[in-house]
Amino acid sequence: MLPTELDQTLVSPVTEVFSLNCGHCRNMEKFVPELEDELQKQIGKVHVTFNESAQISALIYYAAAMQVEGVPDHIMMDELFAAAQMGSGHTQAEIKAAMERVFHSRDLVSPYDFDESMQQKLFKEIEVGETVTQQAQINAVPTFIVNGKYQVVTSGHKDIKDIAKTINYLLSL
Image (cartoon, rainbow, N blue to C red; front, side):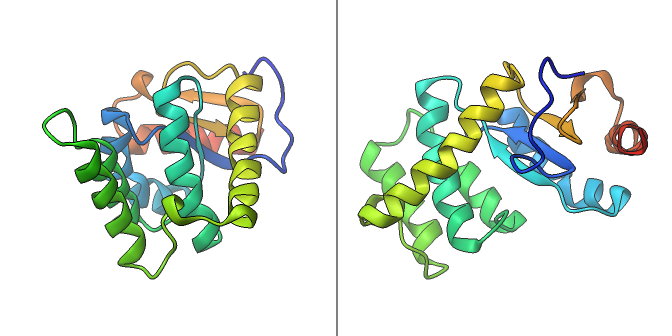
């Protein structure tokens, strides 16, 4: 149970809370299509903002999400994770170029090139992530929020089918 029930306009019935910087989140992304099949529902996403690194990655994620008008597809998500997790063996310029390739390859505007109106829209998207992170008191990812009331701790499950079983049960409450 979450400490505060979240407004349904902030989250989907099933929402993954994640960070592009999180290795476990990147691993979970591989299983999201299977989980969606098990649930017969699309899973929403909220990027956490609990530290500076997560806030920067949230800018990247929400810049993509607002341009595709929803959750980026799994291929794009994998590319965003890969660019965000390039690591210390790469320069900031190389990481920025990798991020820009993810956007430009889809004819999207890189967040580095946003005009003022796009920046304002982006900041509103980030506010949603901040609200969810704070109200739900999220301090570890990946996790799932169900119906804005329940948090599913993924580490307490043996596999994706087990996670789906828990989520389906919580959806029925």
